[in-house]
Length: 399
Image (cartoon, rainbow, N blue to C red; front, side, top):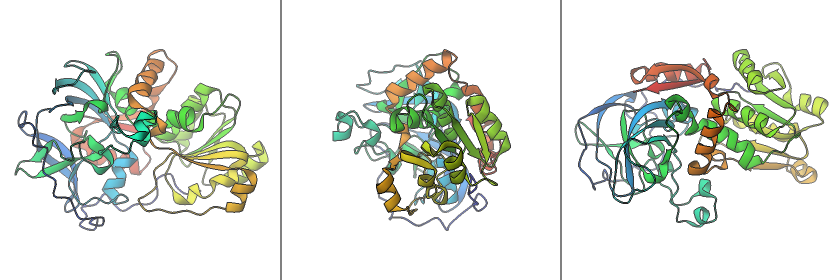
């Protein structure tokens, strides 16, 4: 087994992360003037690394919503930017799972209004492309979020000198105010805690969605979950919710394995001293499903050997950009084994986030145990160190 968080350099101040295509010469979105004064933001700049920067925010334009951020989760996808696994050539306001309160809306916005509590879904679909029309919004080909822009190709943020600062995954949630497309702002009940809402924006929806939407696990089917961070533990919760049995959790952290047991794992394995594939074959006759929630190519390559004939490996963790892997192709074909890609838990934010919020409020999802620490925005660097060292489960930042 490979460590859940692969060895990475110290959180850098890297001029080394300048790989990737040339930066586009897109301006900040010009439709509205700045809405207020400068606010602190956690910014990763390929020239200077991770740091704090004052940014101005323009007002919401047509089809956009202005949000006061109340909580934002720290995710491995943010860490991938900081460590250079996903190179960027422009300064980014980090943060892509958050919750807050609507403070303003642009023309044409109908789904939310000022005062509404919302969860921010980073994967804001266009609602117009072939995939969206077919009901597969998580595969939207029109979204600009993965390019770190708003739908118009611009950014709502500028720095004190007027230079563009870009919203990571279309949000840029590590600040106290932001502007997002309407499809990214999902109304939720006011009684939902903001910290829980923040995690619903990505990790919980991804993990539970991987079970219910991507894999469509049925009661009594067996599953192994590799990696029990926020996403992996959400996979475990989803498996318990649908009645999977047995549920095997694998990690290097005994602390996280104990949490996995509370969340519904029937077996836990120390990944450092266990041949997981051999264990699955000997104890289960192979698992029906193997969920990889780390993003490690070396671990992903071992998944088919864990499966029973007809089983499926579900790739939930995001590997570094450009990573490749190899499999025994004869075994896949001969045994009917499947490899399933899983983006955002194959979820539609406006449908799945409110559903999961209701399950939490009904006491059916023990989400409070996912939050290992709450820190002020000024301690973002320490929060990233928590993530790298597998300290706790999930850290939430509060502006």
